[in-house]
Image 1 (cartoon, rainbow, N blue to C red):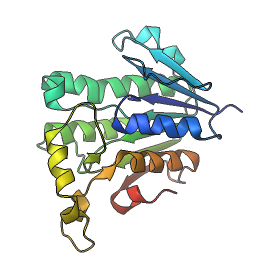
Image 2: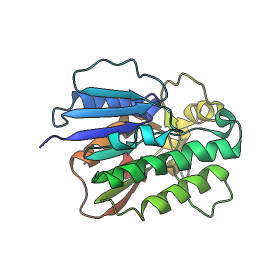
Image 3: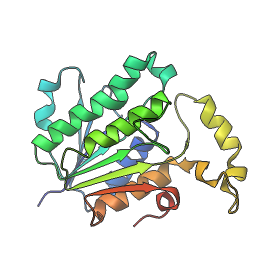
Image 4: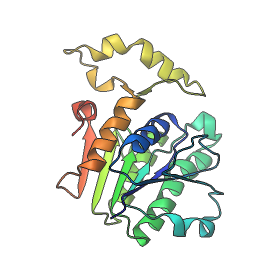
Length: 218
């Protein structure tokens, strides 16, 4: 039976690392990637679709496979407005999840955020919380929610807040530090953990992976 991964956000920090690992993992037969631009990657088992996200009818039938990896995300400064950020971080993932569920995709893996909460005063954390809550209603066989702190790695677009966090990692990472939960995680490490959960899903239908579990692949 063909084992296919579906990835949105494959040009991002974690998504690109995940794509590389999926392509190298022989247990996955095909990797379907959807984005506004090409990843620039060439591989026999890569099936890339450059799409207009606003025209859902043109791509929803293509969202077929075993697992949907939602790695897409933005910031308010990048999006330009709260409405635009909501469209990217909430509405677009839900559109893909809706198509995936309709096409019998079994599992959904989401990069959320530490402190995601639909009632948070933070616009960003509130969107992440709303997305988690809505995905929980879809009835995927497995819903795996990854809640990292700041993401570390080389971005094409520099995020000042993550530069600050990167500089403070020695403080956050100390074993007895009260700020340890705030420590960042390298994109490659998060991708590795995500793939390990996709390869060996937990028994629970919904699981939250955060804290030390993010650094411990299954």
